[in-house]
Amino acid sequence: MWQNYFYTIKKDFIACEDIPSAEGKSFGYPEAKSACEKKNIPAIPFKLYDADKNLYYQGVIWCPDPDSEEIFAPLEWAHWGAGCTTMKLFENGKWSVL
Image 1 (cartoon, rainbow, N blue to C red):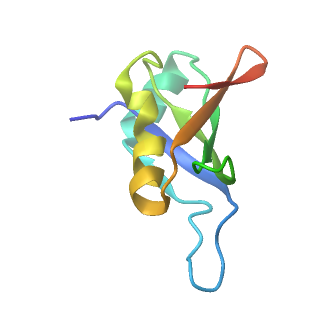
Image 2: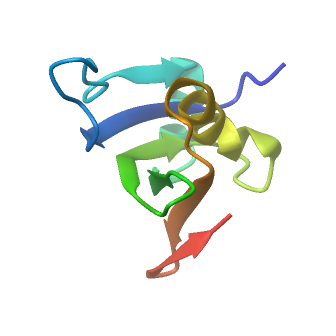
């Protein structure tokens, strides 16, 4: 079970009258954020898209091991909740699809 990540949704692009906003909500384990901060590991910005390449969410994730499967935690949440299929991370000055 994944336990080494913490993420926050900074912007929700699909919220409307019928869909409550996820903006400002956080998920995961605060201990992961604390561990990253202690080791000076910065939060990684992410974007989540549907299959038609529509941007649904933007946020940041703290993950002590960004090469682990735990980096996909926001995509798994958004896949089941909103049908997102693609995640991009902002690393080394550019957005890359995972």
